[in-house]
Length: 367
Image (cartoon, rainbow, N blue to C red):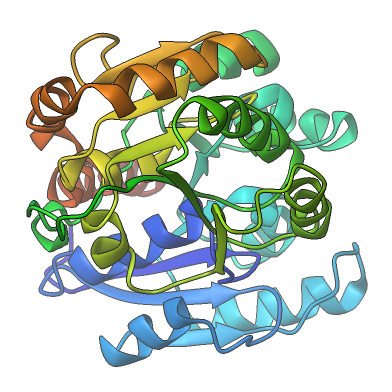
């Protein structure tokens, strides 16, 4: 490899709040700045999110392309223009960004394209774009990375290709393992976008069932999204306005986690569940559905309780079991999760970049 910094461009549709976006920002903050010159390309508009602010505070350039979500000649032009000006050695796409960069990246002759798949392949994109992804992975040299073994299995089944598994990580040292303020309330926390996959209605119904038995329970919901109003109406119909708190998106997640007792995730599907890693880093026991990559993070009966998806009775029962047993909460919360630190993810991605870039360069020089 040449003795110069490798130009790395991370590409994502937007920097609104979500697990993939949070992970991208933590990656960029922790890459070796002696080896890599890093920038972020956002296909959409600037929205003044705290994730954008974090990148700016860490002197990581952000290029906003203000694109609409259509295949338009302007899309190809703006991306090609950016590629020619920044001259990346590597582009690393996330979420649906892959579909927009395939033509511009080939026009600009970018040596290496990595794409992280953040969900199970069948849910990651629509049927039409799954066909495009398959072409990219099989014939255009795009290297897929799965965030869990279960995602990798789904990639193999859907696209017929193998993928590298690199678990998402978090800066575990930023999360607080401390005893919260003492009172009689048991605080249950959920963090996530209000969308179908997260199944907030199931969580609210399960909480309602548990609340009837333990009126000192409180449910705290952090997040926003298209289904938030529906869930708020559900809470009102159940008469739970005083027991359920909607906080919207927050930047002080470590502090909020430190003040809760149990973390619950009621998803119908998940690639991994980075919020689970955050909760465990904060010493919190987990109740979660046994779907996707969740069992690779939460060990049932050790760091939390796993229940079948869409099972109201099982979810309510698991919540009550932990709510009633302070000793069990403490035992489960004390388990370490060092394998999910962001530094491990960064190291794995850096190795992947360097090995494949060197291979591409050797092939180019020999041809």
